[in-house]
Amino acid sequence: MNVLITGGTGFVGARLTDTLVEEQDHVYILSRGSHYSEHPYIHYIQYDPDHPENEGWMENMPKKIDIIYNLAGASLQKIWTESHKAEILHSRINVTRMLKRWAEQSEIKPGVLVNASAVGYYPTSESTYFDESHTFAPHNFLSYVTASWENEARKFETLGVRVVTARFGLVLDKENGVLPLISLPYKFGAGGKIGSGEQWYSWIHIDDLLNTLLFTAAHDEISGPVNLTAPTPNRQKQFSAYLSAVLGKPNFFTTPAFLFSSVIGEQSIMIVKGQYVFPEVLMENDFKFIFPTLDIALEDLFDKETD
Image (cartoon, rainbow, N blue to C red):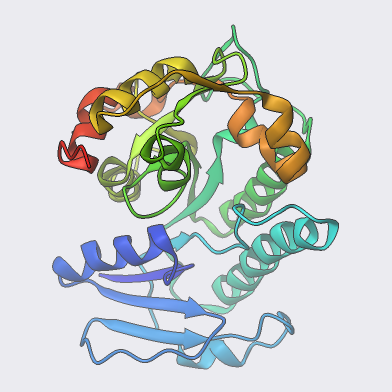
């Protein structure tokens, strides 16, 4: 197959590329920078992020793309200044519109668009359960970004393209994403709950995330929003206890929520707030999680290391 990935040089995109080329799929990576690969199944196509209306990159596209994974976008891990918030939104919208212009001109339409999103679509709550059947108007910056991005992606449906809006939970990986940041205090003996500890963390092991991306693309009956989360969310205080156990470090300290708010501002909502998100669509379609519970997910990631 021919697969197009935006954000293919990022954490998830790079891992997804490795998985696809192992299956001898040709991966075309749409990238802002200039890259080159000698791998026979990896092909880089550069576009100009400052001029998204420029269609020169389309000349390097193959005649047929079977799957699009749209993962591109400015990092959520940087401080959310007003300028970076604008970049977070516009980088996602601009690339999605670029892809749609290409699809409109392509003689052979892609079979499916798997478009990244986030569980930040849902409101934060310590008591309410959310699945894909729940719909909401934007209620904060992150929900506005996810709703806007999903709306752009759904426009591909007018071309006869199946669209999956993949709402990522907290992606757990030992070297990348949020887990290294969350685990850092434990390595200095200062681990513990954050704020009340009652906030929900809806998480997913990186290997399960990659499998869900492949699964949703392969199953024609799946479309619309799909929660890419493990079926067992945990409250933050439970998350802290499991992390403490697997690292063999103390779990006594409490970090006040206001400290995160004062240091990183609006971005702190990703740590001090949360929501219980259930992957109803995946479960209904008999997806099998390798790491359905947090204890086995963390044990696998840290390989039972205690130093």
